[in-house]
Structure formats: C-alpha cells, structure tokens
Image (cartoon, rainbow, N blue to C red; front, side):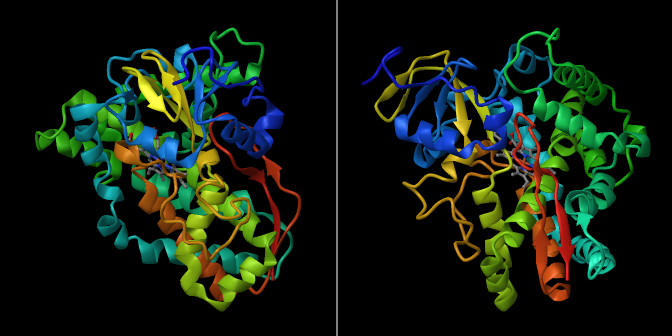
Length: 398
Ligand code: HEM
C-alpha cells in the first residue's frame, strides 16, 4: 500500500483557464499516474478512473459530503442548515426524498408535451434564418422560460437564478480569502454568501402555489420536513436547475454539429435520441468535479488515503476512462452509455437527471423533425470552475 507522500503527484493547477478550457489531457495524465494522485493546488487527492470514482461515490459512510463538496474553506465552512448536497445519512435522505418528488419521471411525464411544444416553436423561428447564438436562443430557452417558472420563486428573483448558479458553482474553486486578486471571483463569493442567506429567508407566501419550491413547505405541513430543512432544500431546486442543463445542451449541439456522421445517424434513426443525450453528457460532462472528506482511512487502488483527507472526484475524467469505454474521446450516438458518471452515482446522484434528460430529448426530437443540417462556428468555452461547457456557440439550422 502507498501511504502519504509516496503516491503520485500532479502539479498542474486544474483551475487555471487553460486547463479549464481543455481539461481532457490533464484528466488523461492523472488517470495514467495512478488510482489516486496528489494535487498541489488545491491540496487534495484526485481520483480520475471510472471504477474508483464510482466506488468513491458509492461509499458515503467513509467519503462524506457533510464537510463540504467544494475546494476552499469558505465554500466548505460549516453552516447550521446544510442543503442536500452537503448532508449525509438520515438528514440527506429526508431532504432528498421531498426535493426529488416533482423531478421523478412520473411527475415530469405531464410536462413533456408542453416542453416539446415550447422548444419546437423556438426552433421553427430559427430554421433557414441567419446565424444565431445556440446558447442564448436554444439551450437557455426551456430553463429560463419554463423550468424557472416550475421552481416557483417570485418573478424578480427568477431573473437572478442564472447569475446565482454560475457564481455558486464558480466560487467552489480553490481560494481561501474574500480578498482575492480576481474581482470576478470576489464578486462571485459575495453573491454566493448572499444567496445562502436568501434561501434561509425565502417567504413561503411569495412562492408560486403548486410550484416545486412550494412543495417543500407543503412537506413541512405534512410533517415530513422541519421548516429549516425546507429552506435548506430550496437551493437544490434553484442552483443546479439551469446552468447545468444549458451547458449540457450547448455541448450536445456542438458535438452533433461538429460530427456530421453522428447527426446523420440520428436523422436516420431517431430512436437513438435517448442514447445521444446520454452520450452528450458522458463525452462532455458538465459537472467537472466535487469533493468529499474521508471520515476514516480509505483505500483506492494501491493508495491508502488517510482519514481527514479531502478527495477530489473527477466525473469528467471518469467518463473518458479508456479502461471503461472504447475510444472514449469519440462522440458516438450509438454508444448508449447508461452506466456513466456525468450525473454521479450513489446517494447523491443528481436529483434533476430526469428533467435534464427530458429537456435534451425534446430538444433533439424537435430538431430532427424540422432541421436537415446543423452547422456550428467556433465555440467560446466558459471557464466556470465547477462546470464545463460552451458560453457562446454560433449556429445555423437549415
Ligand atoms: C445535465 C444536467 C445536470 C448534470 C450534468 C448534473 C450533475 C450532477 C452531479 C454530478 C451531481 C452529484 C453531486 C455529488 O456527487 O455530490 C448532481 C447532484 C444534484 N443535482 Fe444535478 N445535474 C444536472 C441537472 C440538474 C437539475 C436540472 C437539477 C434540479 C432541478 C439538479 C439537481 C441536483 C441536486 C439537488 C443534486 C444533489 C443531490 C443530492 O445531494 O442528493 N441537477 N448533479
């Protein structure tokens, strides 16, 4: 067994812009170095191979979320009333069972036709026209016009959801003081702190009755949650419900446009839509990483990670592991990667996965019905420190 100081090291800072823009060579290098690799910045042990990330996510008794899942002391600081993603054990199960109810396939089924009609109308407006930005016109359409409404915050707060989400995901990166040199990061930290306070102060009377957020307080009435728990769970509906799916759709559209053979395969056989959606998230995983803390010693391959170590789980790397997938860098709509880690696995597996899949499926179905060819210009990748995706994508539908 390798013990502290004897396991492989990787000294590239994964949070620098170059690495954020193209993390894949670094993921490959980390996988090649070993099952667990010490990073210098931040001071964590990174796990990048599929089977080890999967095992780690399925070991919540040892690799806990309660000490935070980010990479700096502010993001991970103890808070009195942590949200689902930062809870363990019985509390986590309680929050999650209520939060995920409206996001389960049975509940979403009745939304499918409405979401498909909305995205179809948008695509009709674009076919045969000028070049447009696929992120703002297509990928953002359902999240901003429908999902934010379903979440149910008051109108003026709905407008801020995108900004809040991007700030929260970005500020999970490794820096330790609010006096950071980077004004953008400093602003994101400020925003994140004020959003945490906002969730605690949300007034039930201002939530849209029947909305997903309101259902958390209905669960309080039914004795399933304590009121502070309902406040804590709101963040799980607000923060991850927009950016993630927007990036996933932008990445998928770009992959289809830049692989005309794959677009042709999909046109020839629309039953491949669910597979193409899964492949989009496998190939270009939106959530780059989260972390856990080892509550006791934890073995990964030939490495013994000591209790107290912060472990970095590289979802995007696991999904490109050549030990798991043949030709992993290839985008292949026939691959049907049901078993993948783009949405995580284990007890914290994404609670919004079915919604994300639904949004992407109806977008592809509407496209296949209306569009012969899709062409993309040069994408501009974002450099969010937790999420991988395209911020701007010139595109044309013919
Ligand atoms: C393609 C889009 C999405 C991707 C790639 C994604 C990815 C992920 C990942 C990797 C996790 C695991 C976190 C961990 O291991 O600690 C997660 C958790 C979570 N996601 Fe998503 N997500 C997406 C969309 C959504 C949406 C639309 C929602 C809500 C409407 C959502 C809500 C959540 C929640 C609440 C958790 C925490 C679950 C828990 O701690 O039990 N996500 N997501």
